[in-house]
Length: 230
Image 1 (cartoon, rainbow, N blue to C red):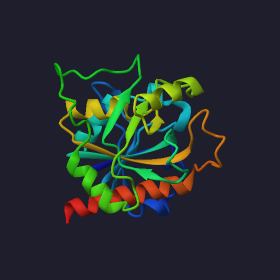
Image 2 (image 1 turned 135 degrees about the horizontal axis):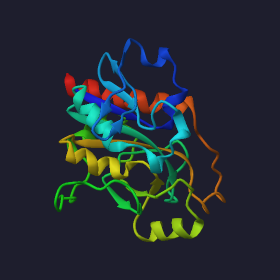
Image 3 (image 1 turned 180 degrees about the horizontal axis):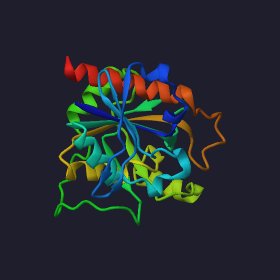
Image 4 (image 1 turned 90 degrees about the vertical axis):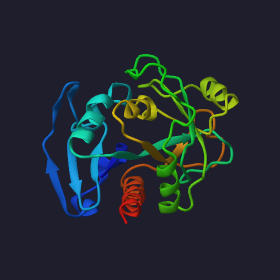
C-alpha cells in the first residue's frame, strides 16, 4: 500500500477532501510518537508535521517515527507532496516538479543508519514516473535544495544554491527521503511552487498556500497511488 505524506497545506483540508477515511491510532514508536494517520480508500495518509500543525517546524519533524509508523500500518512505499520556493527563473508560482535529485544543506537532523547508503538515484524512479502520469503538467526533473530551517533562507544562500544547480528550495525532503531507505520504503515526491525564494520576488509572483495547494497535492498523490494499484 502507498502512504501519502502531506505538506503543511494538509491542515487546510476537510473531511470532504479525504472522503471515506478511518482514523488510525497515533503510534508510540521506538523513535517517539508518530503523526496521526488516516486509512483512505486508496492509500494511507499522514501530515508529517503531526497533530499540532506548525507547532513543530520542519527542522523538528520526527521523520523516523513517521516512517516507522507508515510501515507498521502496512505501507510499502511513500509518495509525498511538498511546497517549495522557486529558485530557477523559469519557475512560476503554481508550477509543479517531480524532483530527481537534491542538495542537502541541513546540519543537525537525523542521519541514515546504513553504512555508505547509495545516493546515485535518491528518488524512486517508478514512483516518479507514476507521479508524472498523475500530474501531467509537472516538470519531469528538478533539483531540490533543503535548508536547515526553521528560518527562511537569505538571498545570498539562494544565490549559492542556484549556482550549485538547485531549481527550488524547501525544508522537509531531508532527511525524509534518506530515512525512508532505512525502512525499505521507496520514496518519490511532487513539489508545488508556493512562492518565490528570497531575492527572487522582483518578478511578478504572488503566493499560493492553503487549501488549494493541499487539494492539488492530495489529488495527484491519490491518483498516482490508484495507478500503482490498477
